[in-house]
Image 1 (cartoon, one colour):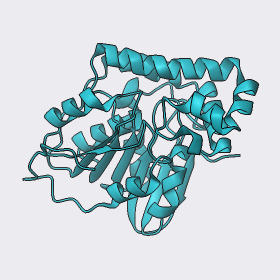
Image 2 (cartoon, helix red, strand yellow):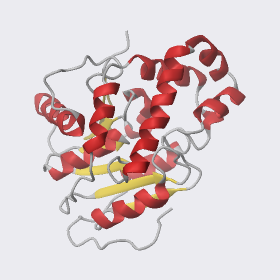
Image 3 (cartoon, helix red, strand yellow):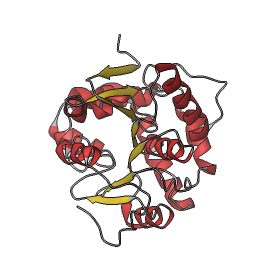
Image 4 (cartoon, helix red, strand yellow):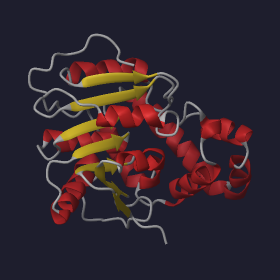
Length: 271
């Protein structure tokens, strides 16, 4: 049985947090590289992957941040570098705001949307989930082909045909079955941008081909709120850039940043 937590490597701690409907394995394309010099902890969040739901948690990113904080404390992980994707990126920013994260790399964080953009995000993921629930066999067959992956996965990836077929099949099965999807999706209605944590070195990354949380407007809002963060736009990458350009993602995570204190806002895209 697949574990709800992956731990490997040695060195300073890096924590990986996935997005809505996903599982820790979305980071597989970058984990081995990160583990060369770091201790990597990749979690299934409650109600996703194979991690059981926890009805006692507060809804949304606040409750999930509570869970991650407690998990880190139990494992003796202090001030880690937290890397998040989408909803996981929102959790990472929340943990920075609480003073729990020592550093953050946030890929396409939720919360920098307007109402229409939030509905669009929820709509795309909900359609994918419904299709995965209703048509599992045809989708599995389609995902085994390059053309099928290009057709089905283009909202999520900049290079969908390059995604590993078995990983895509398992990811859509996880999206179909996760019981945390509904409560987390409902909590998105009140999710706003997390206030900046200027004392925490932070990188916020968007793929230029992101169709779930389009970067054109949301990256600009992120710059206004997190003005001292390092902001990056990735050419050729979608909402989940880890298989689109794993080397670039690893480089951004491991990049040495100046202290967030006194780090001036960027006024140009960094590629």
